[in-house]
Length: 305
Image (tube, rainbow, N blue to C red; front, side, top):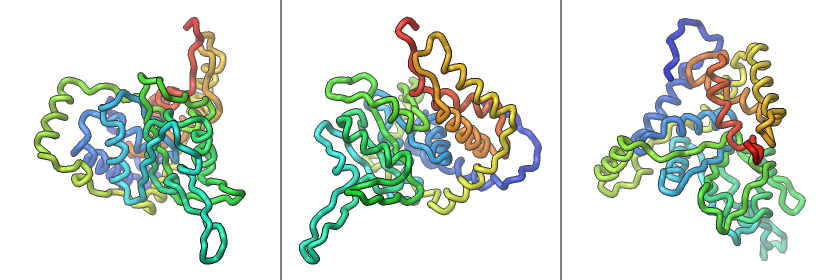
């Protein structure tokens, strides 16, 4: 739904941010067809300092979209394939004895990066999943009693298949709550499918990664995040968010509702939605846009519902 054009003077200069977001969408559009909402939600999550859980059946470009999204950022990127035999040390890293000085040195694991893609997060056992709790919430990892801080930005993109349950371990609610969004990726439309096949044919074997140019660096991203913090949110909007989330906590058809963390996630992402649309104030439409991806994984229906 397109917003009506409004004439107003922003207190915060947002033109550069709006242009950068348009560039990112345009760059990813060279390869990714028909996933405009998915891409916009990834951008908003990044600007809101959040992590994203991506759910969908195999073959609908979840992983390639996440990889190309990391490519448009001039930052480090790591991919971790979760498997049933993966140990926490395979993710966080481990201390190794240095024979030269007879001292243990910490060798950082793949989680120490800026953008981390975790493929099939529900494939690893609970203790490996639990290793992500501290990293995602506090952006640090504690190994052998020593705490190691992560560099900014730090974002986890995790994928999971909703259909296949054999050999998987369901994510606990506490871990699901660490993701700012759960994005459900659907099958493309017939028109998009035709375009996907056509663009693949026209690439003639060229790797998609070679078509994508970096747009944002870490410093620009940090500057944009600072600007977004100053986006105006009226008291009525804050009350509107609180009432929406509060209703999920005592709704007769809901076994589990949204927590205050969900309210804060809606607030932060609403500010990002406003900013990428060139506004320095939040409107109810921003809240509505944030509501479903924020609550997707945080509410549970009762058995009767």
